[in-house]
Length: 271
Image (tube, rainbow, N blue to C red; front, side):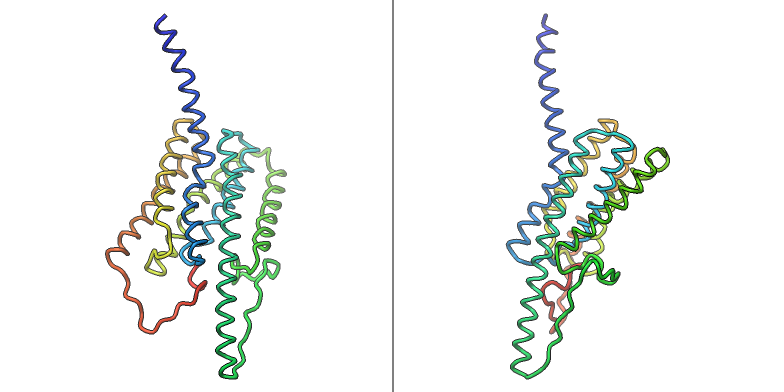
């Protein structure tokens, strides 16, 4: 009788913990971007955040959703991908608006300076996805261009997946590409920090949340018996997160001396 009474208590508790873990998986991935989003809105400066992080996560989660059609995994991981895609589109929208507004303000100042000196100022051309210019890839002037690119990639990848869905080799390769791409999430930010020898503008809270979230996610994969690709992805992500935190510590201890008379107009530093 005592054992039955204990089971009556443990079963709902276990169910509650499972629901909590599933909710953490679905929504936990977007939490690190909340402080970065707020920082960008507050400062109206997106220089410290690499929009290539959005590119990596969009590609990874689109491929993960396509992988689900070939090899069904837990629903929370599928919903996580859908919510992450929406979050990255919101981040892109904000970063694009801020960058374009800063470029416009800089251009107005240039016009004002040119008017006082009777000089001609060249207006920067609009960058569009449909220009297919590799030099300006992922640096377009309108959020709609990013949406077009995402839709085009989804359409092509979905069509190829539809044709090859019966191939086990293709499905496993697709899953590996999805998690490998996601494992490279922090690499654009890592490169951006290395190139500028600074983490200024990057939200440390975001990276700390990356690290804790990736550690939790990896443990979730291992405990739930998710496909091996997911566990490998989680471990790689944790290592990259730790490398970014190492950069933040190193640059804080040995800050770069600003170059004399250097001018850094807004919107020109981000990758």
